Amino acid sequence: MTLGERTARGLTYTAVARRGQAPLRFFIAVVLAIGFRTQLDNAWLWTWLGVYVVAQAVEFWALWPFRSDAPAPPVWRMTVAVGSIFVLAAVFGAVALPVWLVPGSLGPAGAVLLLAGSILNVLSLSRGSPLAFMAGAIPYAAYLMSAPLIDRALRGSDPFSVPFLLAEVLFLVAAVLVFRAAERLAEAQTRTVADLDARRAGAEASAEARSAFAAMVSHELRTPLSAILAAAGEIQRRAAEPEVRERAGLIAQGGRLMRALLDDLLDLSKLEAGRMRVELIPFDLQLLVEDVALFWSAEAHRKGLTLTLHGAETLPVRAEGDPMRLRQILNNLLSNAVKFTETGGVRLEVAHHDIPGQKLVLRACVADSGRGVGADRLVRIFTPFEQEDVSTARTHGGSGLGLAISRELARLMGGDLTVESRVGEGSRFTLLASLSRTNSASREAVPLPPPPPAIAARVLVVDDHEMGRRALSLLLSPLGASVTLAEGAQPALQLLAAERFDLVLMDVTMAGMDGLEACRLLRATPGANQKTPVLAVTGRTEAKDVEACRAAGMTGWVGKPVDARQLYDAIESALVGQDGAASAAA
Image (cartoon, rainbow, N blue to C red; front, top):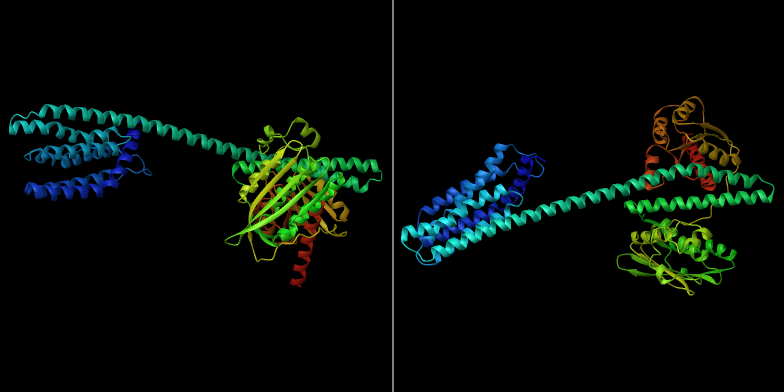
């Protein structure tokens, strides 16, 4: 930063402060003129007030260009600004001289207070600008030093002149020292704030970069993971030998574990970047809790455990919140309870209490009869990647992210997640979540329908990754559909311009032209496939990403890694909707 820029920056603070204080200083000048006119009976005080008003107006004009959002003014303008401060101080302080000469001790005392107060005012208004401080303080200091000498010259020897002079010198020295100390403090504060801003910006950029990297890695891993799950499912469906089916099941189990780890890492990156949001949609609270308990009771039964649910019948049927995230937390708590309990059972207790404003607080406690957690490890149980010991990951799998993510999600829902545990006595996790009551029809959970029957449809699969194309082909093979593969958006548009298709499965993230742009071009180009259903295949399933797919003209979406049942449901919905639209048009 150049000297001119530093000078302009310092004058900017002074200018803003002095412009803001201008009405107050004008009021003080009027009060002084009226008061001194009454006491001194001198008509020249009105002349002094008029000169002061003019000087104040000139200073206001001179300081006007100095604003935080404006470029640095030229040197001549800075000179005029400093000069206007000096002139205004000289005019205002001039009234102190006749006040000093008033007979008695009140005159000098009033003049000293006036000049000393003015110097302190200049001190407070001139932070960052030594030029403004000197321009405003020098006239007052000159009056303060010369007044006793003038008094002595006009009225003879004054025994208090020397003490006055010494006190004034000490006061002026103290004012300069205070100004310099304040300047050093302000500079240190500015450096500290700048350093904190830089660190905060760096931390935000780092969190954003980690989030973007996690999203990119997640997307890149979901494509081969889709192929793994699809191939494993196809082997399980076709293999005649039990041993082969068992091995395929092991592959599928590993793939599902990798998918869970990817979801946890992506959730953690969103939470760290502050981009995680919870939804407010109506759902059936009773059914959600019962559904989660039913799912994990089967898993507990396979381990020889019992899982009991208490209090579900007292919950309201209609609630509003984020059912997906609430289900995620309960799944994690019950999964851990079943995983770390060898004998006995797991107990899920739910209750709620109403609070004013159509609100309710859900309380869910998951208690197990497992081995419990020691106090030394309990304090770190919600730390990301923290597990009880090294053998935990080897024996049970997982990344140690589930509890950390669950607690942050609970806090996003206006609640919290706490734990009580002792070695040998099991653990008890308590979830609090703030929900709303609603009269809207809740979204009832229904069993997933079986795979649709064989369809005689032509399906175009668009993906620039060979594994992605092959995975979708494997998943489509049980339907008996005629599948055509396209290696990217441009080849797909060429095929869509030449042939008629009943459905398009379009990968969203592709090199060159992405799936969104390809769909927009398809919808904008007249032809046989202009209204053909297009299903987005994407690893990014946030609300804004889904909305972007719909805005581009896509009919629906399927998340990666692609689940066969969800794919079949999406295909059935898209084709049924297309048939309905065709019937309406006819």
